[in-house]
Image 1 (cartoon, helix red, strand yellow):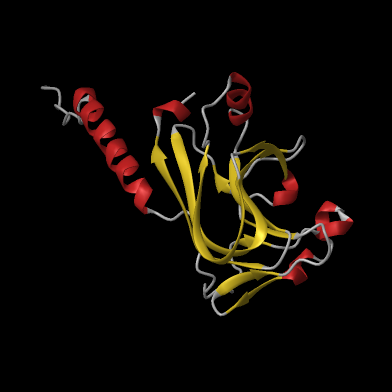
Image 2 (image 1 turned 120 degrees about the horizontal axis):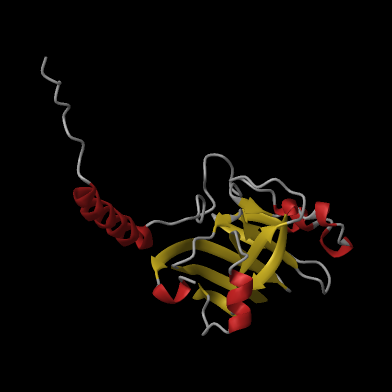
Length: 206
């Protein structure tokens, strides 16, 4: 009785050629994709869908009523601080992938304001998942910030890392699991057309 000859699966050599090509296609497409679901503040799930404005959980009295200081007016996010602590907002945590540079661009008016990428790791005792609450994360890294004030709308751009990385900065970034775009304003201002994109960067592969 002759043995039945089974069809041979795709060879390992072929897969070794295909997989890198797929990875290159994915990396090439990444810069065109906005990682924010609602950078124009008009999402059907709510004007502030995808953004964090409520910081009452943090126990900081200066931001206990922060959610009342952020609204959407005329299709733009409007921040109206009260007092010298200012007011803030940040996007929902975005998974951080080493080997990529992150770039955020937005239109800003008012201020003075300060905008940067905030890097987070899990707090001790928290079981990791793909949809973290900010309360479950611990801030461990801040990118180079844009600090300015302008009466008319101006396009501002920040990058992660945005600077040449020191050994200490790399040690912190190795622990980062999520990033957010952090926006703080001392005086009233508006935000619109926010994008976050990533692009392959060998300097970030550590």
